[in-house]
Length: 150
Image (cartoon, rainbow, N blue to C red; front, side, top):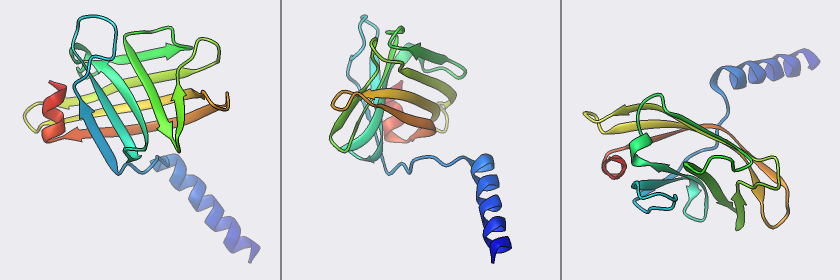
């Protein structure tokens, strides 16, 4: 019995390393709202379980190009933003805590109207002052929402 449990455990570890467990994305929204400082147009991409339980990032339209990578440690980069609302708890980048955020544009295909972003973050829960980790998550935008990115 111990051998079977050990084999199952090892298989799960290998599977998680190869495929990486990510949060299940059931909700994706793209809104054209200039949240970022600067006159450049920006968009907010929200993703998660639903419109009340999500993570989001704001990015300037001019930065939506394959290979662009935006990184912020403790809110030192105002060219983008990552935040969330999980279970009614607001998650933000903070200068007072060891927060981190990264958004990478993996691909943009105007012909097939599809963009892929990789988002990861360590955000501060403003109610509990605890850090909340968003593991590297692929966010795929296609169709009508894609048009708002351009």
